[in-house]
Length: 533
Image (tube, rainbow, N blue to C red; front, side):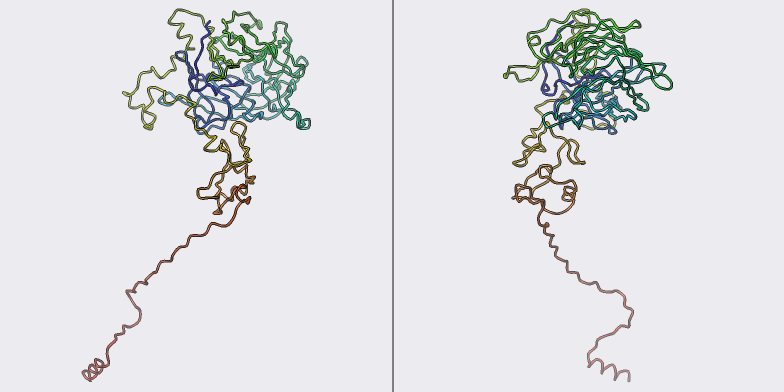
């Protein structure tokens, strides 16, 4: 095993406790970034790449038919593993938004396609559940079970805000354990059912959940009610019968105290490595364990941990996620060191066996060399691959340095753009903002104030505008004055343009219906009269 320090290249500010790492089509994806997505990556999902001791991020895009996926901390994430005969995808439920709101939505994240330049594109769909639907929560777990040729998803645990009738001003943001119910829903029709088992009497969150076929094992977890991490181990057995499912639970004796642990799977077998987590509020769990699931049950063995650095040993918190195949990304805060430019130290932990110096380097890179496009052979000879591509896509077809995320490239929207301080009482904060109008999605609605020569933009929410009035002002021709410049929602009508009418000369009529009349002088008239007489 190895413990390799990593240097985050202009991306350390995006990782935070509660973020998640996913693996789709050979790529590692970061989900749950810090804050709301910025303009450079509106999806909030990044591809994570390790090379030469550096960690870089690259923005990932969604397909046109995808729904919006907010950045969620501590959601329940379940991988539909191709090892089990399922399409490679992820189920994401619950979690906390940057505004500390708790989500109750269920999303399905799959791979949509890869472009000619091998860029990954994802598809996100929100799945609707019917029946006994689980409420909003975070810190819970989901697992896939298979029984009698059927597949279903099991959800258990988590935390949520206190019920609306019990929330007070002092305890408005207080969270409690969710009721110890097991939710079971099928992936095809979304039918959900809740089950109460006598063995599961207390709520728990941030526990370890591992599944094999029709059994799910719950290890550890934290209980807010008792403020403890009891060494619990439950085995949940699920039978997907024709009429209604049958659930049974058994308490085992080989559990251990742990919460917020990092789990990585080693290959197609049900062998997992448990690293990190906490034994108590002030004590990290420095040991590592190997968990093996087979036909006989669960086997937990001690595993020699890596040689921790002093920064890891003395840190109060740590977090991370699995990067696949026995590899883990670990982060510890830079506590008490204001001189450090980054907010976290990053390490790459690999539990793969060393098989030589060359293979060791590939192991430390977490097998990412095969997905790095910097060293791939340019395909300029294959012209058929470039049909339908834009010129700017061809510039970086052989390497993706231009696509690497850089925090310094982000526009400082605290001074310009949507996140300005529009007035003296402006309350719009990019870290806590949430949509207020139905037309808002990623940015707050703004309206132009006509005060002065150049005018200025203000937030419609800060001006206490109703949505009806906002739409009326945006469609009409009235000048608007903000509260700091008159205090009126709108004032006089914009003066209409004075259009000078054109002077039109009537055209001569070519044909007349009446008889022609000739004008002649009296002398000529007298001459013609004597002539014809």
